[in-house]
Image 1 (tube, rainbow, N blue to C red):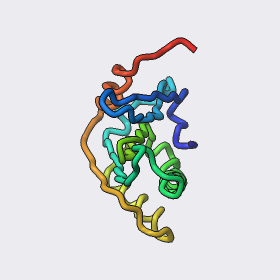
Image 2: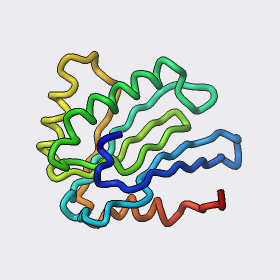
Image 3: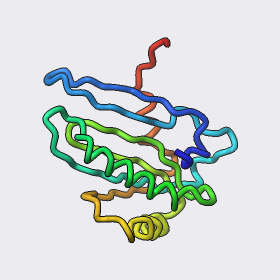
Length: 148
C-alpha cells in the first residue's frame, strides 16, 4: 500500500448486518499525514466490483483478482502524490475502492495504462467533486472505535 504516503495510519472496521449476520470489512485511512492537504486531491473516484458469494465476501479467486487490480493501480497512482486510497469496503457482494485524486481525466488515463496488459476487470467507476473529502469524513465519524 504505497499509495498511503499521504496516510499516517490505516485501520480496519467490521460491520455485521443485523438481519442476516453477514459481515462487511472496511480498510481505511485513519489519519492523514500532517503535511498533506486533502484539497489538493478534490476528485473522489469509487471503483465498484460486484461479485457473487453466499457468504457476502469474495471467493479466493475473486479476491486474488481484486488484489491484482489494486496492485496495478498502485503502481501508476503513487507517483508524485497523484492519488490517495482512502477507503476499501468488502461485503454483501461488493468491493469498493475510494480514491481521491488530483484529476479525473488523469486518473482514468493512468487506470487505462495500468490495465493494458491485464484481462478486463468487471468494474464500474463513479466520480464526484469532493474537495473536503466529505464521504471519507462521514465514514470515519461513523466508526465506533473500541479499546485494544
